[in-house]
Image (cartoon, rainbow, N blue to C red):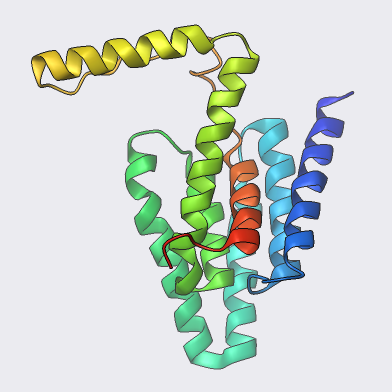
Length: 199
């Protein structure tokens, strides 16, 4: 199967799950978000990047839709949602855990959903990203290396009382990128199904 076929298959599967869970407790702008997630996941799986035309275009649509449907209060809430997403992901971006496209894509989702849904959905997205990252490392046969590096990092940190991290070797699965758009789609799906555990 071609890389394009794989990326379309992953995007279609994740978006189908998102739309299926939306029948019970849908997030706002369900169909718009599903269309955005499909394109973002397809691009991210195929190229490990989410292009600016998609994120900037998505943000314009989200803000415009909010203004059309709810006027200035809607535009304000959408802007707060986008700003909250940027604020929440700034440190992970600065530490190079996420790419700029991931942050901008979350800003689009924040604008579609508004401030209320940014943090609860982001919780599940981060959980999904962690599971996907570990699964990718294990599937590529690098699980033992991951455990050894984390154990050494913890041991040295506790022994010296200075935070120490032994990074993955270059070219390994752990050093490569993760298509975080997939985690975004899965996290949004889980939120629609389970909600937020501490709400």
